Image 1 (cartoon, rainbow, N blue to C red):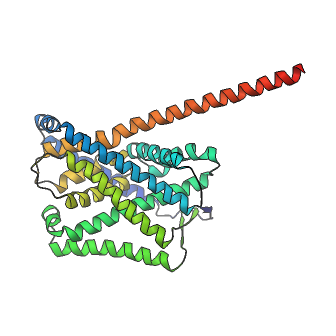
Image 2: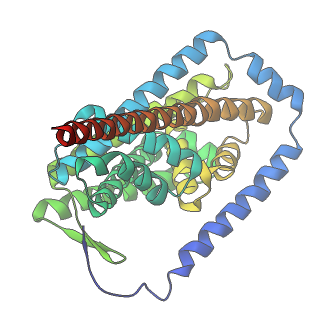
Length: 331
């Protein structure tokens, strides 16, 4: 990423206004839905979550965050940076666990990554590039799952969004066509785009294809966490849930709400409006705890431990220098 001159567009405020409007609408919808929910139904949903379901959900959480480390690995390969995998895994896990909860990933995730990668000589510009490329992997994976879901599960999704089956298939085909078009665009020659005042060189065709496969696999693992936490007997197919989940995540990211809070839940509840709200809200709350809260706490603990280790090493280094100076002086 290299800086390029030029002011921001005069219509840049439209994106912010749209994000705020989306968040407000989602908050109103969620408030109305919550008014119809009985607390006893939510308690029953929590009670139905057995240890086996929670263990399987924990396994998918672990697999999802493991695949997320591949986002950083692909981005580092694009930037021609060699970083040990243990550092890559730490940077990826902590940055995603924190940005998923706090929101504003381009700021929070980049800050965490810089704190981890900077001691290895990675500049702030490279960290910004890494974060942007990883975000592109996220979008490509989400788009692929949404497109395939609309084509593959068009009848089931038609029952949810009340659109004709052929309309869902055409929308899904259009999304997949955009992704294929992007692949063809980067396959012809090396491409670069400008993001505000920065110039970013896009990944090649092979690397972009890897981004799509990795991103789609990670999205499926994340949606599987919610799938296993849903009450039994709801009759929702996994492919349908994965497509709705990916779409809800995209809306949550666009809203810039911390973790898509409110936007994600309202989208899922509206999509599955035929299902009992109490059970769905219970599953969504459990999902928040398993996929967001627990990794967030673990990430904070890891960063805290890392800072302690750094300070201890710095103290020992300073102490060693002081001893060397005394020995030299005494001689």
